[in-house]
Length: 175
Image 1 (cartoon, rainbow, N blue to C red):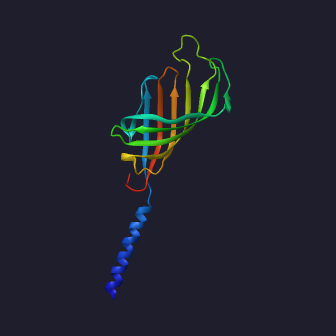
Image 2 (spheres, helix red, strand yellow):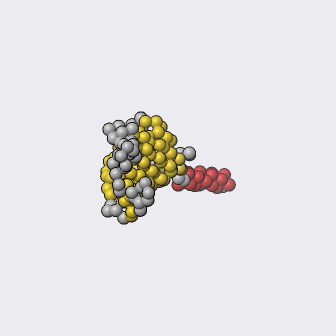
Image 3 (cartoon, rainbow, N blue to C red):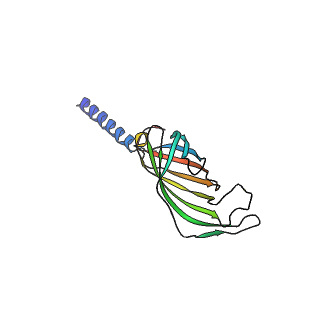
């Protein structure tokens, strides 16, 4: 009888351990930088865990609100208008895996065109916001979320610089 009770207790302990580990959520850092040389070039990202040469492809948007804030002008700066901005994009890694994110942010554009002789042309803007993971395929198929900050700097000459810092959430697998 004692042996049967010991086996039952061991089986219950193993089942409890399996249930407990299934509930654990794992996080992985998501850090990347992106660069687009000009308006006809792809926006290419490198970082972890996406690797090198991941391509940013906008799927939806950008969708923008009416201006809600104005940055006042000062000597040498003509001020800027800011809008709320939403887009959805897909990062396609070199192995074909994809990571889909929603991006919510504030986009500000200078009011005045740049002064003659400056390297900045029209279309200059900055966008600061947050990303929220929608899902993924391949290496990212088990991604169950994640969030963090994202910043875009477009000086107006067709180039774009991007910085992403945050995390991805998985239902299992240690970091």
